[in-house]
Length: 461
Image 1 (cartoon, one colour):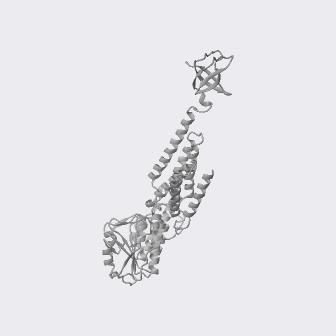
Image 2 (cartoon, rainbow, N blue to C red):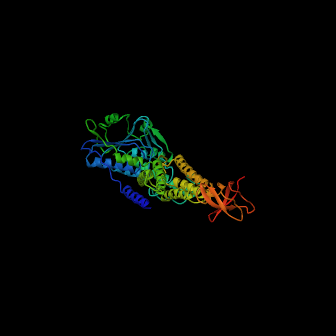
Image 3 (cartoon, rainbow, N blue to C red):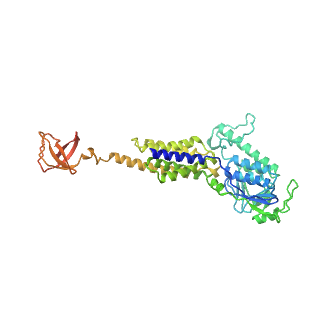
């Protein structure tokens, strides 16, 4: 018990450390007149958002001449995208967003970020667009559309099989997001009609088409080519960019930001969470501190760090913990799999409702859930099966273990008098189980039952 209390205290201490506020990593300083170069090569999440905002803030504080953001993203969270777009629209330092190199994406959230830049550029082979909101935004991130006149809401099923009310809300979200894209494009003098279609119709465009449609300003296949074309480029506000002879200072993510960015992947967080719960369950059921505590503690703490970054459903997290608890209880109670079945259902429901993420780029993979829950179920079914087999196995120790044992009568046995028999190398008082039977000394006997320390035996046939 004391060892378990020590383990619990250690775990609580580690949880306090992991749940402390995330501190920002350092960035190299850009001197006055220099070009700050940052790369967003991941999903748009709270970690990458903080990284981009810090680069922009330091660029303004240090008086940088220009910020170049290389973008390659499949999309991301609504709230993080909005904060980046707001920073781009209000930045005093000119910002260039370059979707490159070839094969890069500015999908979904990346579309808003690209059209919000002072200068938008793409490499040949890059793609922009597909910004349609696939479902309602998570709680706390939902845009608030303007009320529509009565009668405009459509009746009938909404998106994803929702009812009339769900379909109306989804339509309002789409309308609001489309208008937001249109306003950003108009502020930057870009094609507002295409920006709206990217939201409503999920249209996409390559570099050449985007240039022709007025979505971007330049095509550049490399950073050097981009710098060359930016030299002497006149912004709509009259400022002229100068890049020739200007130092380019790269602003990479710190190691801490990179680690947190990995933990922004819900699939990794989900695996760490389930692994941590199972390992700690095993550890608390064992008498000593071992590898289960180390693996489970580290996995669970890393999972909690990821859960701080991603929008989660607390009920879903509770269902996962409850599901594991049910499976553990089934290993110690004779329910013959009822609790394990309930645990599997709880795990599945909790897993599919754990994250409030509408963007497919950040959603939990269904195969990840099925494989993980399947593996956990297989482990507990194996443990449960072994327990049931142990219950059915005949006792081999104690008085119950004497039943069925073979011995030798050392004295005559009859109903009128007891005699000694040798069983398992020990002498016992015994009488015939059948009162009409008489057993002679030297005959082999089989124990049928034990009562008050006396054996009831029959002649071995």
